[in-house]
Length: 282
Image 1 (cartoon, rainbow, N blue to C red):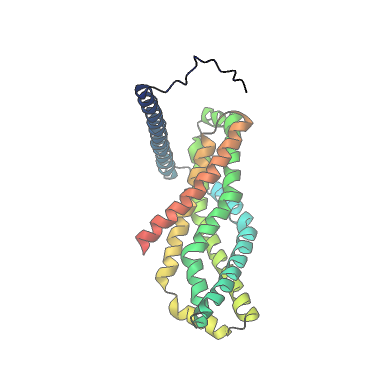
Image 2: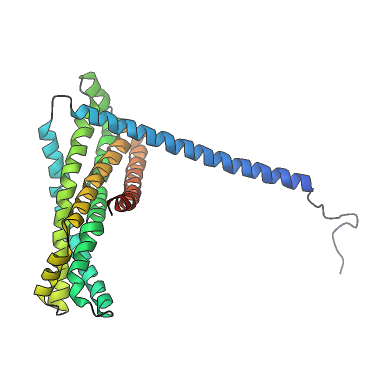
């Protein structure tokens, strides 16, 4: 069998010095990307902090737009009641179902009520409520402000001597702080009722045991932890969504990207904030 490779051809081995130079260049490029990403993250956090500080400052400057706050509370709160109740109901049902078979292994089925209540009050209630508000109200908030930016309505407000932060961001942030704890309370009530349906009506646990053990084991500190978390998440969701809408790019594509980034960033910060607050409040 004849070979088409010339007899004088010999494979060239890479020079060790060239390999080292390529490795050094790749490492340098990776460090540059990491540095650029870190600088962008720090700068973005700084801009978001300045945005929140300016909004907080404008809250104390008249005129106080109570009608806008009430309107945003209706949009965030009343508009989210159905999805929050539905999510809370099935979350409580799942907790009761899983908890019953887990506690049954250790002969502690009577503690099902406290297990459901503590899981909802301390963790799942604030977190899932904030995630639902982010997906329903936060995304709409970002898109609405973003459309106002690209259609130059923000510039029109400035031309009329109206501060855009005071009119657009402050009412939404205040409404979020006031509304998310109320939605969390509804979520917890629906979840406890869902746990009652599964644990008592479906699996045969005594209703007195379910609520009696809950009353004995659940303390006010557990309720306060959920309240503090819901307040923080209400601020976090509206802050991030307003900022992303206020700083969105031009065109429909910019609004779409800003909305997606707002939902993703809010969701991630809710989970990170939940861990931080849990470690502080324990």
